[in-house]
Amino acid sequence: MTSPVRQPAPAHTLRLVLGDQLDPQHPWFARVDPGVVHVLMEIRQETDYVLHHAQKILAIFAAMRAFAARLRSAGHRVHYLAIDDPGNRQRLTDNLEALLAQYGAGTFAYQPADEWRLDAQLLQWTASLDVAVERAADVHFLAARDEVGRLFGARKQWRMETFYRGMRQKHGVLLEPDGSPAGGRWNFDHDNRSAWGGTPPEPADWRRPHDHRALWTTIEAAGVASFGDPQADALRWPLDRDEALADLDAFVAHALPWFGQFQDAMSTRAPRLFHSLLSFALNTKMLRPAEVIARAETAWREGRAPLAAVEGFIRQILGWREYVRGVYWAKMPGYVELNHFGHATPLPDWFWTGRVRMRCLAEAVGQSLSQAHAHHIQRLMVIGNFSLLAGLDPQALHRWYLGVYIDAFEWVELPNTLGMSQFGDGGLLASKPYVSGSAYLDRMSDYCRGCPYDRRQRTGARACPFNALYWDFLERNRDTLGRNPRLAMPYRQLARMDTATRDALSAHARHVRGTLASL
Image (cartoon, rainbow, N blue to C red; front, side):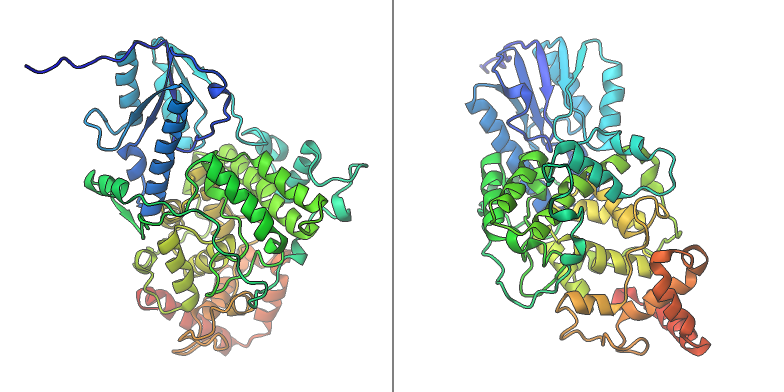
């Protein structure tokens, strides 16, 4: 005789916690209410909407499980739906409907979803519910969703620097007592562009490794598709707030002093250099931006890090991170379809294998596949630069970036990819396309050494593909970009080239674009 299925105790409220809302300091958790059930779920809806890196799936699931355990240990009720749970309907709202009925809850509560598709799904679903709905206040950002949109309105060009200065003043960050910027300047970007020659050495990786081979076996057995190296026996991303805080302390102590000077540098010998690797913890809400900014500012005021490094780091969080979120919410859902140059070339297979002869791409793509991470210059000036020059499909590139990077959630990834990297919005977000030939890559990295292509050659079998692609891109888009003041110098250089040289560059660029798979 089988035992009857045990029904859970009723609850008056069901609260949804998404996989990027792992903040134990959220007001929801200030007190324990036995009538409230917190729901977390691992679902195919979220693993399958794009092809994700194995580490991204594994880290989010592991962090969700750790968060659920933390809530339980604090006395909160939790209903956790694992990816292989027989009762898991694998779709967010289908699971929520079943759980509302199961617990007899009269109220459904949720925090605003940061991705447009999830926010729209929840808004549509809750509109038809016959229970009370509570939408919590957003406590994880320093600017409101619509703040950037309200600031710039109908202007054709939006600029982060304007927004950033206002945020500094609004939140009292890096200001002198009279309200002027610390050090007499708002922006120290020009002080932060050094190549790295090996000194000081890259700090040892301070992140704790985790063994999640058992969880990875479960994920694979559930049929979840992925790509990249799972590193399931040594996953190094922080999986709870305590680890994230320890990583923040280690960054401030061991890397922040040199972050600014070398933030744009790239090296085959040092994949991390002096970057914080805190974006995953920030974007899953283990850390809050205000506390990260405060730690960095305190390090400067106590003389433990130079102002240029601290300002550059804070600008990425208080400025750029908040700014691109504002662009996202102001311009969605149409932003995802923007394609200013009409590019449509499919991504070559080496985006998923890393097998490409160009050393810069092999390093940047290879690191992305092995570590689910590459820093902003690798993303922008290696992978993104090449993709724009080669005319790759920006929507396909967006899906790849969204899937491959551990910190990629659409609100932050999409404007960075389509707006800044691929200039898909025609200049709303960025003042110029971020493109270059091989000279920039050689100046900021050691990638060109040992590459089978010659950075000094523009055409020919051994010519670095970046060179012909760069000049041909400028030539092809002269009508739309030729009057951009930030591109005046390269257009003057192009004008000094004779017709035969320009024709040879265009011919070689066409050859490169036709042989992308074999580069």
